[in-house]
Length: 421
Image (cartoon, rainbow, N blue to C red; front, top):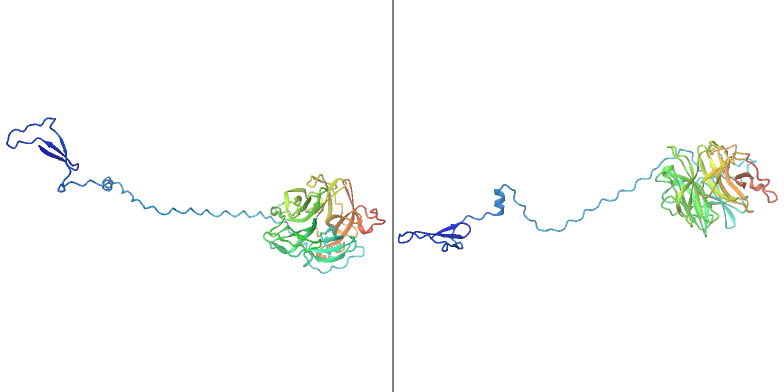
């Protein structure tokens, strides 16, 4: 038998071989043919079995990447910081003269025929009755942020001082207008206009005091009302409805882009410190005599109707006047009752406005407002917007503003009431 080795497999095939004695070889029968498995000896020389790497190189393929030892898990990427909120739209109101009186010094004395109840400059007055007295508050004069006076009877007035302790950090000093006070339980809330330093617009804030005369403390971090897209917000005036619910009225300033001035109202929280719901527009500038401004809203409920009084035209002129509208509810709709004002310049008063409504000691209504002396209109003319208190009568849709309330005779209002002169 001849052993034929299958190289590399360890197999040997035994084939017939010549006889040793030279006789003819005997062909093996199928039964005798066999395959013998032989383990390779150490001296066998065989070609090495190609590795997987060598095979890949022979085929021209790149070698496989070596396996990497597992490492620590990769940290989650840090998300980007949130985008800052968009800046508020700030539209500038039309320019105008400063409403703050230039000095605390007393203006020249009023004329002999003046109907003012006090000689001091006291613009945009608001009067509230509390603790047995009447308290009046006005737009800033000189260094006095909220000038305050006291009266037992609406006729005799004495100076009290500054009701506002200090401005909040967000406000710019020197631009405080049209304050008003709302009694709430055992406290009082002062609403006033001041300048928002970040935008340069006039906005509305509020402060709290334990006494009607103050001191009021403003701990706010931002305005209560500031319609930046409408040029700012001024002239806050609280109103308490017959059901005891408190509301705040104010004016939006209008813009250089053509946004007109408007009158708004919105509900207050029971403590008077926050607004609730959404603001509702009551009026916008419309009549010729109002041009270019309506402002200074004040509301009362009388003779079964809601009555809205407002000022129109430019405050520094003799054309400033008071208009009237009747409203179906606190939130309107409101309609004007006359194509002209219900109170305009008259004897002893030029440019009356900045009005508020309050009750006299006998329960009748009076209109508290300011006016220039006819001979000195405007601060440039050394004028003063002095405090006036006029008799007020409301019948149905009609409003009548009479003469000075102190002209009452026999406890009646007949001599004080009459058409505006």
